[in-house]
Image 1: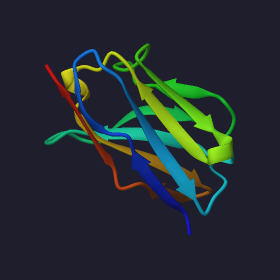
Image 2 (image 1 turned 180 degrees about the vertical axis):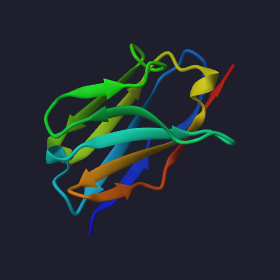
Image 3 (image 1 turned 30 degrees about the vertical axis):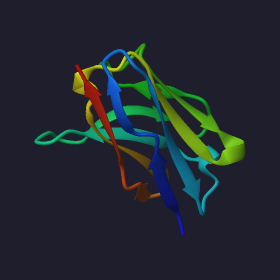
Image 4 (image 1 turned 180 degrees about the horizontal axis):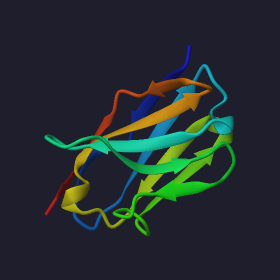
Length: 115
């Protein structure tokens, strides 16, 4: 059974950094696309960053140059390094993995950025 567990969220001041982790089990994560999303209260869930089954990455315009998505294949984990955080980055962050036609989501991790 595929499971994703996010971690690394927390409270940070504007300008600070956090690294989120998305640990996968039940699947070899490195061969499937993984995407980070976020959702703030009252807003729709939005794509933040994605990495395909190789090394191609994509980012939302709002995070380009500040966030970096990467893999650690040995740990079956995908990371989201978030630098120069802004209050508008406050949200619950989720990772999603797609295996063929099935989507798997983690439980989410809260990121709060104070002024």
